[in-house]
Length: 171
Image (cartoon, rainbow, N blue to C red; front, side, top):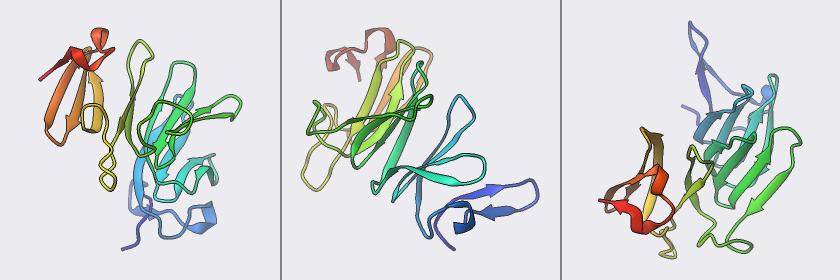
């Protein structure tokens, strides 16, 4: 089997290939559909966006692991280069990494945005022992006003309305 993107067309499985701009032999880490119906793929070689005909690189040369969309039509993209906010209207990108922000590492595992518009980023880096404030590996979706943080030590639950600091974490 070949790494990459597969989809069910109702009768059989199809595979992304180079005729649609899909890079050959890349693994997919994350898939995301934005509010405008655009499909995104986070791969081992970067973030790609499908324009209806072809896959176009948006964040090249960085393994991409996470996507989330804010209320202002910004898609937040996380991976090995930190976080990129891509504006759907203009295509402009804002880059946040350990060199220009308070992120402890550029290795982003997950991104979630709560109802108040707060962007939550989970980081984790084994090689240099850098970890997020709670040792988070992944943030799960926001359900019923709570943010669930999955860590190597277990899980933590935070009330969304009071989730401004680690001191509000319930074990």
